[in-house]
Structure formats: structure tokens, C-alpha cells
Amino acid sequence: MNQDTYDCSNAGDGFTKPIEILLVEDNPLDARLTIEALKESGQVVVKHIHHVTDGEQAIAFLDNKPPFSDSPKPDFVLLDINLPKVNGKEVLTFLRAHKVHKLTPVVMLTTSLDDRDIIAAYDLKVNAYVAKPIEFEEFLAAIRSLESFWLSTTKLPPNRS
Image (cartoon, rainbow, N blue to C red):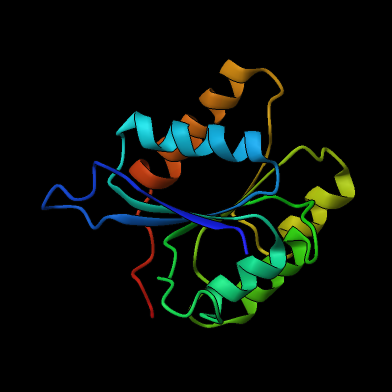
């Protein structure tokens, strides 16, 4: 089972609830870049970034199934669409079908520019669909932009666990 949790040094300023992020990404380089961009920016109070590498693990994490029995409810999900075992659309379907997760903001972060994938994701109530930039600096800028908007500017729904 490949799941990592990254503690972030900016956890808690006394006014803002620390954010739990679930990153569902099978590409190790994209995962590392995403995690580093979130950890280093310091724009938001991130408590943990939980990383799983396939859709089956994501659903187990969200459903508190072993080996994720003690996993927290994520406040925000970054979800790849093309995942092994269970794809991102199926994970999104799971999220939206469960009361505790149906309001959790989900951003589809993927390389797919296929109109069918984009339409399907929005039909399944994804909050945003973002194509991963190929260039390193553009990728980091995209992650920081997502963080700025979704985790700093918007008001996340209260934890309903």
C-alpha cells in the first residue's frame, strides 16, 4: 500500500483551522512537485497532505477502510483522472454519493484535455478541472494558484464527519 502523509510546518496560526489535503496522484514526479509547492508556499495553514497513488486507495482512505482506518476527512481533494485500479471519475462518483464527502471541494488535476473527460468531470460535480502544465515553472504556478484560490480565498465547508 503506497500512502504517505506529509506534516506541514505551518500547521495552525490560532485563527484558521489547519487544512487536510488528499492528493490522489499516480505519477511520482507530479505528486512530489505538488506536495513541495503546497508545503513551501505558506499561503494557507496546511496540517497534512495525504498522498495515495490509485483510486482504490483513495476510496479506502475516504471510507476509513484498512489500512486507512484512522484517516481524517479531507478538507480538499486534488484528484487525477487517469488512475490505476479505480479511475478519478469513479472516485469523484464515490465522493459525491456520500453525505460526509459530497461538499468536499475536488479539483481534477490531470494531463487529459479530452472534452469527454472534462464534461464527465463537471457532470459528476467536480469543482474545477485543471490541465497539468508540462513546464516545471508553469506547473508550480498552477498549484500555487489553486492553493491561493481554493485554500486562501474561498471558504471551505465545515467538516461534517
